[in-house]
Length: 238
Image (cartoon, rainbow, N blue to C red):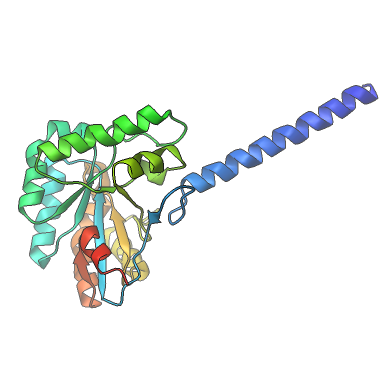
């Protein structure tokens, strides 16, 4: 190998390593819970009140809504449901049911695709198509949760144009929990005043989380933490 070729190969390797490092950094930034390159990513609310916000992503599905609302009603609690526009299109009465029971609904995009590396018009359509469906069902959504927590610049800019707030979380489904008790205990270990808790219970594949929901609610109350919507939590911001 000539000296010139060796230098080229070395430079190319360095460039590829730099590109890989930059890509990894961008990926990590895109899923950061409490940081956004543009706008504000709200993952926790500073408050002196003993309250937490409980949030559910995806759906709505008939069985998921029935299960969650029954568990919440048993404790006198209200929660925030971040709904997918495609599912809302098929299940608009479920949105009205959630609202009638005093729950809050938020926007979780139309397609539930990762919201990075798209054109501006794509973000606009994802947000506003779902916004229109939620409003047609009687909601006035102002909160958005990025699918998979992914966001960089395009999504926050689209949300800012329509006065949406980006809601993340500081407590979530424990990875690897194989039974309801272990799941609930891990949620309760992490929860603190001002926490925004994320649970996935809408689908049959979320069996452990479904079974854990009553245990989570009971445990939060036993610790003196009241469950409220994200909107209520934000109003208590210190």
